[in-house]
Image 1 (tube, rainbow, N blue to C red):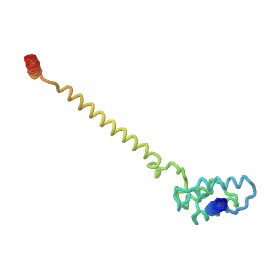
Image 2 (image 1 turned 180 degrees about the vertical axis):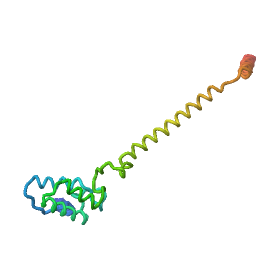
Image 3 (image 1 turned 135 degrees about the horizontal axis):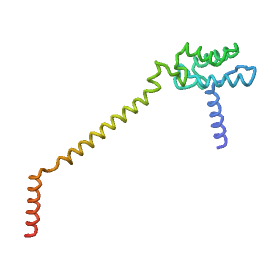
Image 4 (image 1 turned 120 degrees about the vertical axis):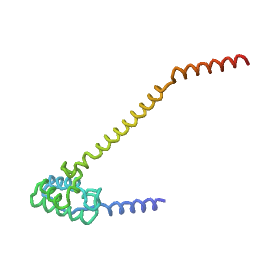
Length: 162
């Protein structure tokens, strides 16, 4: 039993290390390493679509990690690196794309759809309330009310007679 547990633990350890992206870049300071980590964690992989560059094992993500390292070594700022990647891959590489005329629908589309939904719901509720008022307002005329009273009186008289 002990051997089985040990072999299972070893197998899980090997599998976990096989999926980790390992970068062997050398940095001059811990601040540069942290800057590199921040950049690769805030940029999206163009191939994986919902993973950042740090977590992706795609070949393009590996290339982008190398490219970011190279630009950091050249002394480029974070904005210059991000601008370079955006010019090459579009706003898709950003998790928070900028507010431009092309991204208005992306930013305000959900709120617009929600407002349209509330508007449709409001119209439906108002129409139903209006129909209920019409039904209650469409009561009996005076002649119909008198006839109904007479029928009810006759029915109660018939019950008493029986």
